[in-house]
Length: 105
Length: 179
Image (tube, rainbow over all chains, first blue to last red):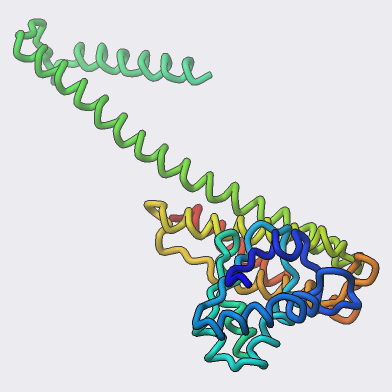
């Protein structure tokens, strides 16, 4: 199991909205089918998980909120912040936004 | 037209010179020394050099401002599209995501250009960035239906934020122009 997720390649180039009912490639699907397990595996191996947001056609805030808020709720905001690296060169402001989601802001 | 004005100015100057030379309170030497010619040439070249340097600097500053203002105007065009869609009450979900990403990148570019510029370093666009994020969140938090976002009850909130955004944008344009 890798400790690096590039959303545009490993999940979708066109991430959708929040819930599975909104359509394929939702935030809910991303969290349940990919992110949660990848983060758990990284933690078990004493590694950090890197998530690369670049290369997609843009994100809905609901997608990122659903995925990363749930990650923060499951593992605790401090654990997630200490063990997660977000790459977002195309839109660097997503990094702070996601930190807010993780903390439940 | 400019050439005609320059010629008129030269003719005026020569006329004044002829008038003064014929006025008994002023006498003009009809001889000129080598030293005076040399001094005249040097002074002329120094004057032209200084004028060109200052002019060059002014042109460079103007170019910087024009580039920034052009980028800001592009962002304005993008927000007009958001306004139009908000008025109609419907956004295409995929188009909205894509457009917001592109506009966000334009705002980030403007931020970088402001930091790099000589005269606009102290101009910040944090408020613009924050308001943009608010608009994006208001629209893209809504679950799409068959690929479309129906703005519904959020329409007024989006409208208010767009007005705020445009006001901040205009203030930025004015600040850049004044700097």
